[in-house]
Length: 375
Image (cartoon, rainbow, N blue to C red; front, side):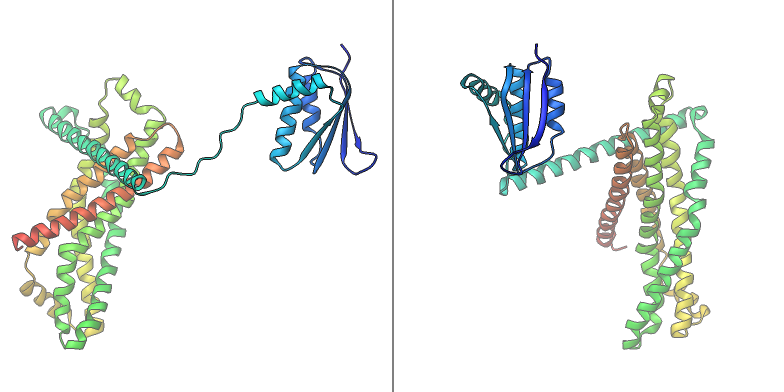
């Protein structure tokens, strides 16, 4: 077997690179041939001279065919000189046998495609809603079991989550309610002053905060702060296979992970709503005093005489429902996390979005419901 020799030089009559091959182009030398051909510099045209090749098998022809196809894909010509009729036939057959890449297909378009995409999205959303409803059922079942068997209830975990979900959220919730009350009082005073009805700013602030904004904005803050924390904590445990380890040891993840978290939200979200309501009324009273000259005593008298306690009850009734929604969605998303950080980040974000959207949608249904009842 003659050793393969690869020589590269400029063509005598032009600046085109010329590669001369000598020896055997066989399966024994194809690795060196591939390495030498891959190292050739890019050029508009490349000439390969095989006149001095003693023997070429399908492996050598495969290397030449691959080089030519690779260069032509980059708009570079490859000319092979010195081919005998037999070698030219071999090269053509090898080139025909090379796999052809599939032509790029245009993405399907049209009304049916759009309807299919919408249908798949709706079906996926309904499937996720059904899974979340199943997790709500798991929470109720495990809560009922803990009532029958108090020794299985994780009181320490409940206290920890109450502190994390409730106590540590008081500053941000109070600040939010205070600022919202200031904004309502300022904007309301601007509009009501035009009609000489500045005193009605008390009802505007009280009804808005007690009935809608206090509980809704508190739930949104808790969804972003606590719902994401639930998803991240349970998702990290899924990534480290701690949930599977719990099942192996006979520990129920629903009892350990779901019940304390959701129950902590059920306990603390109404309290946080009260904090937001009080802070909003205080902020509104201070702005009404500064902007309209309504003294705090007058604000308090008008609040107690003109605003029914039903508005506060309506707002507080929503809080446990929002708490269950946020807790179930957060725990459900955490259990869907796979074994990679990309899945953890994606599901944490989607859990926050889903919780906030569901809370707003349910709040709209509550508004229609209470309006029908005349409350």
